[in-house]
Amino acid sequence: MSDAALDPAETLRVELGDRSYDIAVGGGLLAEAGARMAPVLRQKRAFVVTDATVAPLHLGRLTASLDAAGIRHDTHILPAGEATKSFAHLESLLDAMLAAKCERGTMIVALGGGVIGDITGFAASVLLRGVDFVQVPTTLLSQVDSSVGGKTGINTRHGKNLVGTFHQPRLVLIDTDTLTTLPRRELLAGYAEVVKYGLIDSPGFFAWLEETGAALIDGDTAARRRAILTSCAAKARVVQADEREGGVRALLNLGHTFGHALEAECGYGETLLHGEAVAVGMLMAFELSARMGLAPAADVERLRAHLAAVGLPVVPPRLEGRRMDADILVSHMASDKKVADGKVTFVLAHGIGRAFLCRDVDPAVLRGVVADFVAAS
Ligand SMILES: O=C(O)C(=O)C[C@@H](O)[C@H](O)[C@H](O)COP(=O)(O)O
Image (cartoon, rainbow, N blue to C red; front, side, top):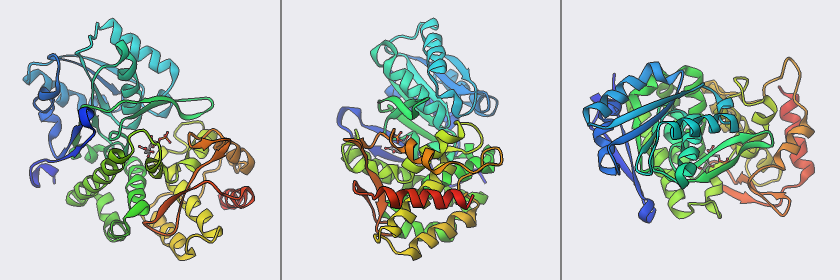
């Protein structure tokens, strides 16, 4: 069933003063993209960025809608995958935008998953000192998380997303029908970020996911839409309260300090997808909380059981048959953006739905948690 068979698209608003924008969620929205973008265009011109996987699936519908709305457009296709979030691809993308003679009024459109949204948003934020962009996320992960909130960036050899900007989109257009072509592994990776919102401050949502998660993953369109709307609303609330991560926004990073360390060790390839790393990372954060006497062990087991039940990883992968090195993983955490005065701020939890920030993690307990997860791999 297409999501279009449900109610018409629903719209949320991210209130950020003159940087406010709508998030439209519904089935069939790609076909309406041109008309929906029209009110936020400064000129009838767009530059669409996508990747080699998404282009054959969805680019035609988007460009047809731009044609129908009389919006002239260029397109640029990047390779698919996390490795695309690099200085080299940023340079080639900016070069293509300049070669196409993009102007300050040209709308940059990111059509794809988190990688495309992050690098395209970054390019838009520096092109001609900043131009507008629209997020058209096509993966569950980008629909529930990365397309909202204005974090853009690329990875460097020092770590994940270490170079980037805050640059809010002018519109987020979520066509839930794009999930029908998403490989199950990608869908699951995005589902990890959905679970994250339950863990942060919504135990009722987590309980609903325990009931509904499997059906959602198997294709229940109403459940998918509800999960996307709930996640985007939760993210919008946090971003409105703390746009540039001076405090509470760091809660959205639950699982990411561990997750980014795992991704760095895996080399940003197909070995471990971002959402998979976040799944393992969230469990590590809960285990650390429990070992510090801050969270009930029963909640750690509840989280482990749910992640395993839907098919997400609960231990780090092996690399070419070998276990990762716990000390190297801990050393990656020193590059976390939440480091202040040389100390990492961790997102821990007093239990499901009760995340908080903690600056006082005992290094020996942390090392023990990482070592035990690695040993279980
Ligand atoms: O939007 C945020 O803030 C988040 O932390 C959401 C994360 O899920 C997302 O992966 C984000 O890109 C990570 O940000 P980073 O600052 O840790 O690179």
